[in-house]
Length: 190
Image (cartoon, rainbow, N blue to C red; front, side, top):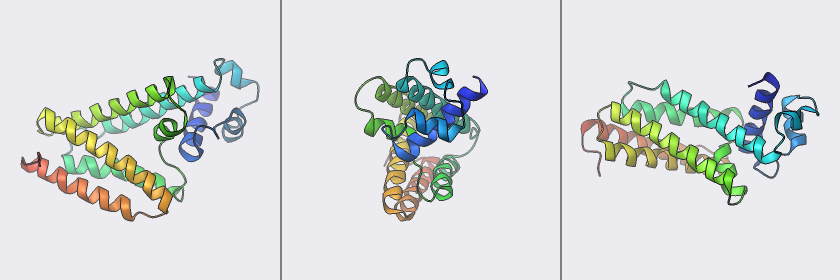
């Protein structure tokens, strides 16, 4: 990926997470990235949906890369660190930025982009599940818990943004941590 294309993709991912699909215009991406105006159709001849697709793929890879670094940790620490990334993002932006995949899912309408977001969520669940399995959690429980973790944290991010508070987020994460500790103890099916 060229430097300009990467800057534009990063900018689009940020704008999606902050402002949603409709507000992620070429003009906004150019302003945020500092890319020259002519580069938009050079790098994304398929238009806005091609740019958004690239941003989703880039964000999905970033999260998978981060999860790869959590290999070998116990389930409670995986939850703590995964949630910590989302909390840090909320904190550093004053609750302005959430998840670009959620933004596309809720505002782009049905079609290829929503399907791509759904596939990325599935990859995140698979990666989390793999971490829990490597920590000794049974496969079915690992997948179920990974799904719960992702859904709960994404929901907590949305609610925290809406409320401008970490109250819901911290409550959800604490519950997930307790559930993760029970997985480690072997009674996590409840």
